[in-house]
Length: 129
Image (cartoon, rainbow, N blue to C red; front, side, top):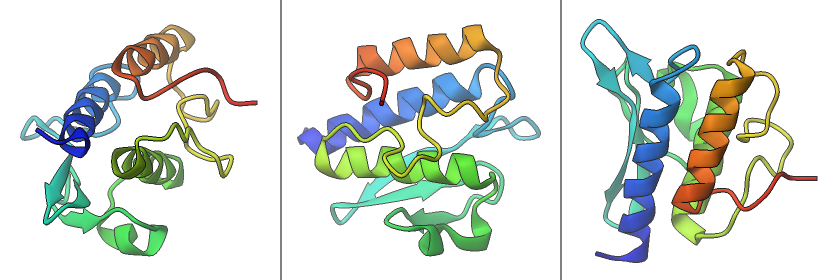
């Protein structure tokens, strides 16, 4: 298994964690689907839980209208995608959508649990300044 494949696996675990608490972003309860990242031809894709659309994850335009969540979660998906591709810690370097973003509407305890889990997986290093 390549390092990128390992990061995809960890990213999908993180998405499942986010989907299992708070407002259940990335989870569609009608058919019990959770969003996920995919690797095809060494490129990172995202499958939306609601639309089931598979989209490239290199910029906002590629996620487009088929992306079910709002802008904060779109930024998070792009952030995670960059981590999958590069292995470098990113966490919302553009100021939007990272795991330290205060605009999710998740309870503080859930956010802390998600952040701790992300550290455990190797996605987060420490809080961004």
